Image (cartoon, rainbow, N blue to C red; front, side, top):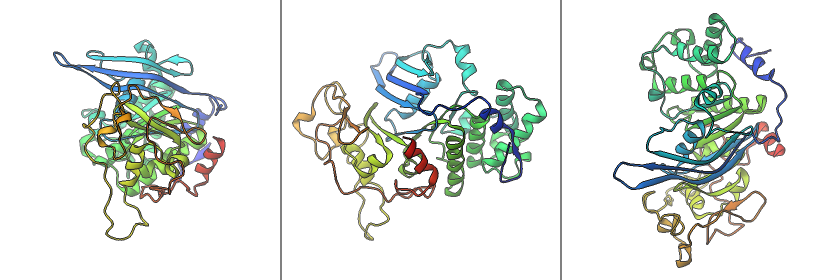
Length: 381
């Protein structure tokens, strides 16, 4: 039994660890050719996710990065079975320990969510029930999936809020979401997701509403969950500082497809896709001369080609050429082991490192972090 920094024993951690040893070579979640199409009545169909594939192992953090509208959140919602049933077509596979989450009966999927699968949503105000006290929303997850008394569930709920950085958690348990600040609501949502110490945790922009200090606390808590319990995590974010300090493998999405996938150090040290290069170049550098302008990506995410016509990024790419109009451009191995790129004119294999000095909440600016847990994960991989 472990003891938190506040002196409260973490009984939840004991129960999660008692499930048995974690096989870190097991593929916990295998997403294969996932496609999500939205059909509006009387309007054209829109494909938000177009053939996405990735895998997550216990103790591994897989990042999904991209601008708004690239399909990151829709991917996570499809995997969790949270998309509406009307006007939406989902195909492909999302295998969790051999079971396809996309075809599971609703009752079986409901049993998995909260107990083995959990998700931290981006907007806590629309995710928390506004007419139910925060404490009830935390304890109902514990009582739904674990054999635990009401009083013990309340004690653990109070400890979870404390560990997530909420002051005076005993009082906050009695309050409603509208009585909490935006940051506190987000931390309460994270506490609900962590309540049963899930085997797979999907985080959709989990630190968006938090100040820098609380971001660092939350990310440290997530690191602890991954390293100590072998929890697999999918981190969806646009914050490359979070990616640099937390993720093991990074998938860069654009217009519904993964355009580059690589281990974290490889991606930051040698970005090959021109979109990834643009994302890293548009970030303020700590070592840049004072007054040096940023280099934003031209255009907007709406300036795209259909993937059936060519590279969707071509209209915004400074290196686009006539041969970029190649239908169904494949994601191909390129350069070092584990590096895949979907690009006709990729960046040189050994460019000067771009964007390695990132300003991030966890003090995780550079991929070459000195954090021992990150080094351990890199060694395991």
